[in-house]
Image (cartoon, rainbow, N blue to C red; front, side, top):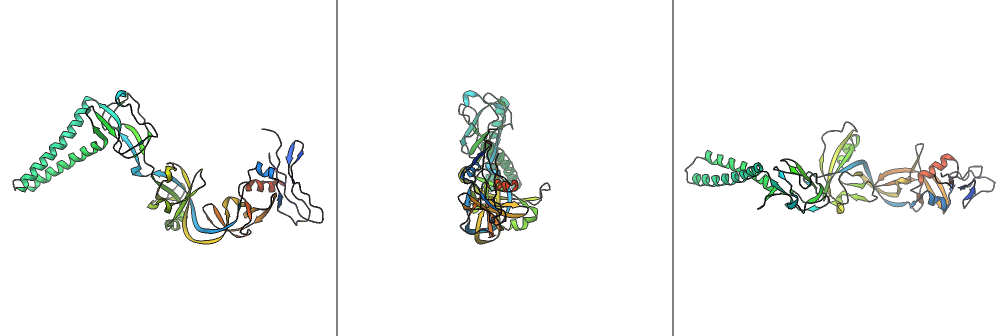
Length: 386
């Protein structure tokens, strides 16, 4: 268990300061300056040992450009053309002997590559051959009727009928050709898009039916970021021409403009459960590092920008509605400061007053320091494992 001690008030009495932890009843504790007249109120003494125990980290207040933003949550989804469910157009068997190179999950496949060899049933074989035969017969008939029409031997109505029949047969044949490659030994189901195999819900030796799902392929080179914008801020967010985001579990911020990003759609309805309006952005996935289904913190640039002193947003601690930060004033000394904050953007907050450029603030560990203030005690390790 950890406790922190604060500086008390200052007066004529001598200040007490423990620079190193003391052992008391098996506990390592630290005491802050403590005098009785309020001159040093808000000062904290915290030894390096205790700083390490709580993982305390600091950062310097710097001058930077802060742009007015609207923050929202987002989720990464696949582009419609970047997700393909491979289904079998025929009934048959996946023979192990003819599928020695069956793609596994995580394998990259190119569009048109042979995925699964299917040995069709007799009925399926007849069906496939009929589709092929119907297409070529319709093509020949159209060519014959076109020649007759050119020689004024048939009416235009007959030519139109031949064209319609051919187009229908061609559509069926082309759809089959995009799914199946006909070989001398049978039929291979081919990849409709380039991408990574995400799922293979069938196994060698399986009997499959027409319409059964065989594989899922995902191409995540470009993704869609669905941003759920609060309805009350939608108008300002919809005017935003730039946005940035931070993926869950990552510290890096990405700007959509640097990823070839663009707004592609805005929902026409409000989500009644959370009062948000989905706005959709498309962008190039950096090194395919972002996975579909991940969440993001999104910042929509909705207004102007200002240069000024800024600190990481995590350095700000709310004390009963007052924004405060803890400033390092020595290797083991910290001071609590009320601050006036301005705009927030990409993890930073603008400081209007309270902290000057170059001063160092507590980032990680600020909340523990705040708890110590509330406890009016000492940050200590009890020396026992629990």
